[in-house]
Amino acid sequence: MIRVADTYSYDIQYNQPNVNTFAQITGDNNPIHLDADFAATTIFGKPIVHGFYSASVFSMVFGTKFPGPGTIYLYQDMKFLAPVFVNQPYKATFEVLEVNIEKHIGLIKCVLEDESGKAVIEGSAKLKNDRQFVSQ
Image: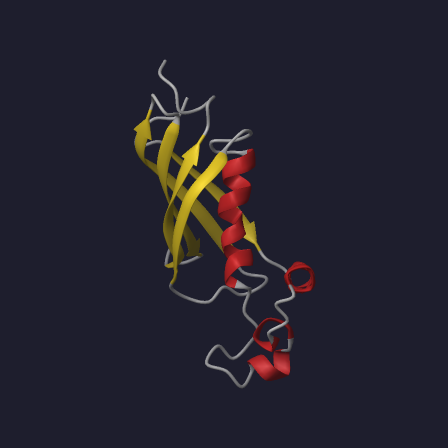
């Protein structure tokens, strides 16, 4: 059972082959993600990971780990604060802010941080899980 103030973290690293696959699946072939020569001419100086691919770690964790299987997304907000790069370590952190036991709904803060602890994406998600947001 998940309660207010519960936390979870997950380490992740993105790689270029997966960025390329994400571009192919979504059709987002922006060269900022795929072309090192093009990206070198931008403010980032090198390719960046798609924002929604970077943030997909939240969905993966919610659906498979915390709260886990059966979780249904009701809402997600996000702020993209800094670029995400391939082959660098990141940590997704989660904190339960609210739980509605009657409706089996939780509000969870979610943050993706770089290795220095700087937030690169932050937001919150409202989730439904009939097995995890329950009383004891």
